[in-house]
Amino acid sequence: MTIANRRSATLAAVAAAGLLLSGCGVNSIPAKEEAVKAKWADVENQYQRRADLIPNLVATVKGYAAQEKDVLEGVTKARASATQVTVDPTKLSDPAQLAQFEQAQGALGQSLGRLLMTVEKYPELKSNEQFMALQSQLEGTENRIAVARRDYNLAVQDYNTEIRTFPTLITAKVVYGAQPIAPFKATTVNADKAPEVKF
Image (cartoon, rainbow, N blue to C red; front, side):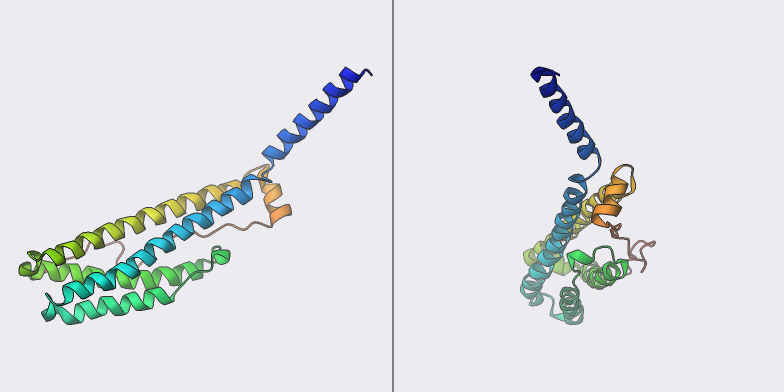
């Protein structure tokens, strides 16, 4: 065998090994797992933004809505309990932890819904610029949370598909011991019914 033939054979072997390794998930599985963790951090970030923003806005509006003190205090209490429940990113495969987190966030969402219904009952509050800013910020915050949750679920779907398909399935089980990660699910409390506003 000539030197040129040996070099060609070596290059072919290196190229074949690279192709085999690129298709087995050695790099893609950790990359997708990290993407899931990053998306989870985005979800937590949006919930934290809501937790930080709401008390300041509610305090501003509270002076204009003294007659609805109980509703505003309910939002504050729900916000406090929602910030106490966290999920460790290393335990994202535990649906129970995600359910507990979502339940606390759902309670805060329900309190915010009651607050917004109060606005419909008392139109004079709507004319106040502060209350309109609160309403706008709440809507924007809830939209950001929905987008972050959707992005997290897409990343989870991508990761779970990766660890369940051949040939990466082998690497996922043998090398990483990978487990599927739980996606966010809709809350079951009145999730199938539209909010009802009564006057």
